[in-house]
Length: 460
Image (cartoon, rainbow, N blue to C red):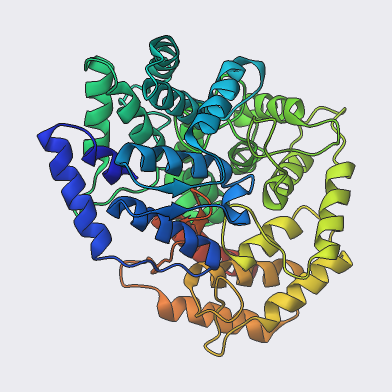
């Protein structure tokens, strides 16, 4: 999508970057593991080639995909490609305009607001509605980040770039274009985004009891978290973005229980208390349309249950009961942010009562999914990967330590698959932008090392 946007910008640098992106795409066929991702990949490929798009299947109309479907329709319209989403351009324009007009009446994810403003500007300009175009562009310019991007996300920034190009080019356009060009890697591709606050939190949680790390890294890592705590007391997945409940609870866990971080913990606990819904549950984002995610809810429950500064009025029982109900009805636990069964089992089980039958059943299912090489795959039947194996070993050590053989075989797999530089090969498994998956080496490292770190601590 970044490449398509650049191909529509009349600038030699943009055209050259678009050509590099197209070359990368043509040499990297889709490696989609599931039908949804394959559908999305194929649609993006056809969009790039200017082919007709048919986006009427239920997948394209689902809550997670609908905004992406609109974005694809706007891109197709700009390319002059045929697209069928079940609604024509006038209907889409009216729909986007109506939602944009009410943007201040409800909580929206910042990147949703950016993409909504960009789409409204682009669609309004196509019918010559200059007032609506200017209104949308004014809103858009106010959301630009210091580095020229929009929410530090390449897709949001690509849409914004096309919208800003509707008027005579100004500083906002130039900064936006520069940010897209800078973010392109040497091979012509872009990565989704960086997650330095999320990654710092999970590395701290993984290595907190490992002596060399504790002595040389932990204090600096926690100081980095405290320095970048948002004004509302939470944390976003990276510096400069809105707080989300998943990163906030992970950071709260990473701060530990030392008095040094009591004020930061108290601020975060207050933030999370304010995010609790009347139902007693938590969403991921500060967006009223966001759905509850099992793994995110579990992180919030665990963090607040271990935090001494949690307000006494916060009742965690409804959230625990919801998780138990979800896990009782689903034989396979599913997290919303990682395509990794072991991740889902470990992170959700931590928030449930110790020894609960649903946890024991999940551990038994996890053990049955072990491969002959001693490791675990991200999903049942897939080849073993270090990240899933490390998390599976951690889950077994915490909830079924008497099952020695699978634990030992998993540890052996991790030791033998580790590279000479101390890292492990990773696979795309972080769901973002959903349904696509991204790979972050820091996350592979944290997940793979988790089993080794816990086994080392227990052995000591």
